[in-house]
Amino acid sequence: MRMFAVALPLLAAVSWAQAPAGQPAAALTMPQTPLLPDHFGEWQASGAGDSSLDIPDDVAKELLQSRSDAKKYTAEGNAATVSAVEFADATGAYSAFTLLRTPEMRPCAGGNSLGVDCAVSAGKLLFWQGDTLVSIAPSGLKAVSASSFNELAGMLPKPTGSKGAHPLLPTRLPQEGLQKETLRYAVGPLTYAADGGQLPPGVIDFSKSPEILTARYNGRGGHGVLTTIFYPTPTIAGDRMRAIEAAAKDGSIPDAREAQVARSGPIVAIASGGFSAREAAKLAGGIKYQADVTWNKPEGYMEQFKVSNAASVMVQIMIFVFVMVGAALVLGLVFGGGRAAFRKARGKPISSIDDMEVISLNLRGKPENGIR
Image (cartoon, rainbow, N blue to C red; front, side, top):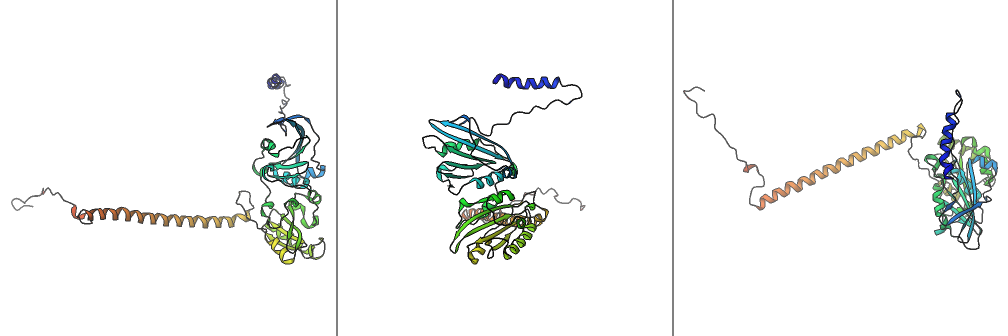
């Protein structure tokens, strides 16, 4: 293998040198690094495995799935099959994670936590890291510790830039009464339908590229579903909010006649189901959007950010001026007052003006012969 690795660049160079005149040389494409390593920690790959990540082809296409891999691993009498699927970005990995997380799976806790988010059941552990979704299915006779796969999580591909950005909506959800295992994140109509979404696709308008998060809540007055939709701009969100309100009133949305709809920036929130009107309004109104200043924001956002930033800079300048003036006064009192006290203690006048002696050379003298 080492001889082949050394010879490969030489063969490419010979092939390029022998290319017929007038024809472009064939480009050399290096093989992509395997998604799953041959070994990590105490685990050693023993062969290919059957993937336990079953994503329908149309959904995989919508989530921008790029490649997948599955291998069998053994370690000191233990065995496990690890399946991995890589997507174009972290949003696709998180959406697939919520789609494949079954109702019996519960969030990992303590030492069993892996990746950004993790869910576990009796015979399966599911987690996502970066732009990759990973499933671990133990098959040995001994118990498998999730912490033994920490090194694997660190060896997965690391997306950069916007591809590695985590979805925004999960960070905006109210936590009281939230059933975390019911979170479902959709990036298109197919994943939304697979997640069991109830809003009509025409009302959501997937042509606007929305991202949708649904979650179930247990409240004092009942339980229901909170749906949050993130649109590219507040203008689109306002238009869709009015369409959703109209659909809820005319019965186009199941169990949504008493639904409460609210908007915060580009996010529309709909609380429906068995909530009381007061509780639904509180839940929908609890979604708050906090904009981050970036260079790729729409032009309409930038003006308010410029005014806010300018005001903040002016306040900081004023604070700096007051601090410097105060420091100058304090230093003047300390050094000037200290010097005066020292002179007073020595029996001298506070001021040193009287101590000054003027030496006169008297060069002019007296005038001679009355001539000046």
